[in-house]
View (cartoon, rainbow, N blue to C red):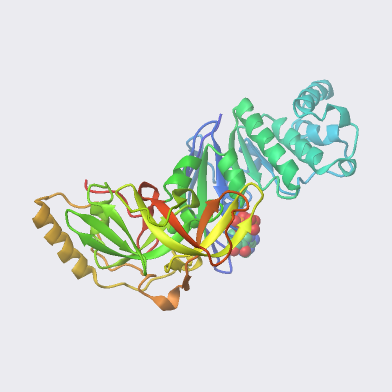
Length: 435
Ligand SMILES: Nc1ncnc2c1ncn2[C@@H]1O[C@H](COP(=O)(O)OP(=O)(O)OP(=O)(O)O)[C@@H](O)[C@H]1O
């Protein structure tokens, strides 16, 4: 039984690198939490601080509600599994699994029994006498798991334990690891840069970027309602289409999202329309996943449920079970790598927005405050072309395998309006409506 809490945990290395930047999160007892992010985002450093292998520069770490900073690693009831397994090459499988028990003075007979139980649970009972060098990657991984389980820890910390294995074995073992940890009921924190691993294994996923926690939630939540543009772009394959749009709010009628040569119209009774009306005259980012897009006949009219974009196929990618078409729709794509932290230029122009908000309140007779209050000048990417790379959008659309079209063909696309995502110029999700 273990819970973990991080409160504003920061790690700055002596050379000034901020590896972890004010991260706060809670892990529930028995939960499987995946820390996901690209290489260097600080995931391993978070685990190592929880294990006691590194000290935070600031903030608090609590295990079972108790601060642990003064507790040495061996007293933390934690088992850590690394990517390279770190088995002792000169010891047999049985010796490796039983080693932690030997260290804590468990008698040989009791030790053999526990080793036997763990090994058979992991399906490696028949290789107990072998050395690690005589095992396959998958078997070595199981031995590492066995060595971690045998002490009956309260918390597993796993740092990319599958990254050295081939993809078939990885898929097999990730199912095994997630069912095993759940059977044992052990709280687990699992680090990976592989979104498929994260989405399939996790109870909740915490997504990090440059030391900052971007979003945390169930796989369905972070995929379905990404908190930031970065998370939107990071999760999903093909990547979410992210298009620059300027907003025109026609009060009581619709919100027009002008994508360049074409527009989408969100009816005024759409619950998100009022939040978007605050961006009247400004640019935002509209996200649409491939699953929100379906080919339609070219003369299909747009309506309150589905917008229609006319495109031309730039190129096709065939993936066996499906093909992806990448379309030119005369829109501009947003480069996510430039977004988020570190961009500090003020956007200005808040006054126009506020005036529009006041007009809106007067016209609609509403006195409630909008959820999104943008009093402060904000960091801007959209209004600062020098900071972000713009390029012609190539809208990714899923098609049946090997469709009878080719590059250059026109293709009309139905866009499910309820599946659109909206982000402001800082890359934060624009959320629904009025309080
Ligand atoms: N001992 C160290 N001294 C200085 N900088 C370090 C040290 N360890 C890690 N870093 C830096 O801290 C940052 C975070 O590293 P960390 O290993 O936590 O990232 P990660 O997300 O786990 O990446 P990876 O998946 O590549 O292991 C990186 O910029 C890394 O270069």
